[in-house]
Image (cartoon, rainbow, N blue to C red):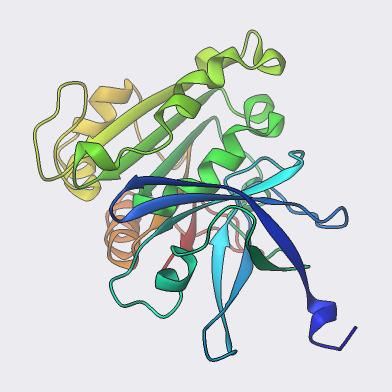
Length: 258
């Protein structure tokens, strides 16, 4: 084994699901030694036709205890990585770093009553992992998952989200979760309409949740496109909610997914 090979393992694709022309999921085998905390990401590697390898970071959708790894991806037109990734089929090989990375984990918060998970697009992935982990249900009284997409067809993982309440180990706790879908480019029954920042500023998001966003009780995780993260951080900062750092505990944790 070469020095570079010591940093990754080769995993086999078990399943590839196309959700829309631009969204798909990948499920792979998992190396027995691979460990991660819910919310973390791994670097995935694909080999191009010229023999070179391209790496990108992807949050795990799967729970830390699952025997497989699952990832959620968008197809970037002419993208060097996703165009290669989207061509993979069941039985193909995907390289996975031996080490997990990232700080979008519950460790970021020392306290808090309500956990808000605000995601756009494939930024939903780490929150699905967190929601399948018992720790979040033990720590928080209320969990609000806000998932924003452009079109209703892009609302992925709906069966998983709605089946969380049926997990055996969440008996008596599943009613802590409130799921709020958001669709920005069309009116959809049962979903809010508008950008997350607008829905916070006009109070519509809090009305839908029946809860206030406050520095005292709220802890907020953000994952998605950088513009959403920057804009939402600014809106929350105006409410005296700040980024949580190791040297200064706060109310907000982020992961830039792009």
